[in-house]
Length: 206
Image (cartoon, rainbow, N blue to C red; front, side):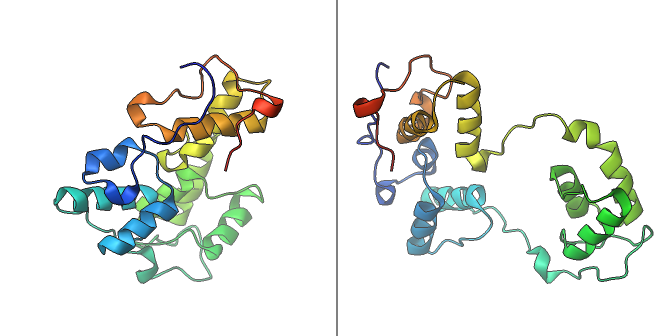
């Protein structure tokens, strides 16, 4: 695939997509998906991946995935809390818990993926158990983690910079524009070995 000319003519308008498989072949922004959901009467909450699944189900005429109950409707812990406080179902990563954990483990505490998962799935366990979980997961948390699928742009840029350490941000954005313009089975990926044009020949990214 020589050159870096961006071609987007093959991607159909989102309103012309007629199946879930075709929807998943292409990259769509959250704004595009939200507008399609609005016109189709599909619920728009739950994040980009959940929205894609609901739209795909609607296009295929199948049952949509069950929409998870919002944690905001559940009882939330209020101060004071201690190491013996039991985590209720639906508890959020609230400011009350943030203050508690910072008091227990220090100001470096953050709700990373390990702690978010523990609070989300830890109903019936105590905040003391959560503190132990924090310490038990620090070695794993220090390792580089894969970027979640809904953050495809961030994942692409991270891989691009690793493969092309001398290229600038404009080149990375041009590569991303080409990548996202193609169906999933024909994407060049961030590790291609050719380089983007420079100066007058550089692709303009919108």
